[in-house]
Image 1 (cartoon, rainbow, N blue to C red):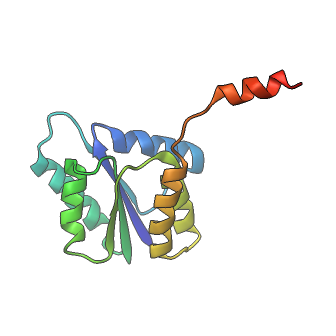
Image 2 (tube, rainbow, N blue to C red; image 1 turned 45 degrees about the vertical axis):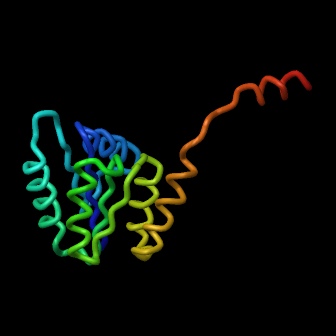
Length: 140
């Protein structure tokens, strides 16, 4: 099984986890790690280590973080550099996280999930252009 950790600034992890659970239900081998105001990097590091320890029976671990270069990302990559079974994905959005969880639950390979998460994440970002709809309505 692939373990999943979601980390981010403030209550990002709990917030996105709440949305995941609303859409696809509570997940096993999934840990949310918040970095609330007032916590130190040392506390965050301890919380990430606890999350990793809780997933020690997992063959691989995916860590989803909010920002490239933020403390949750930096601490996570330090762990990934020591363990080849850990991959860190940054810029996490709800679409990529849900698709990754669903793929994991269908026993898709670790590397395929990592690759797909990036593609899906990019496709989940865009802008809606209402002028296209206005122009189409004018044609009717």
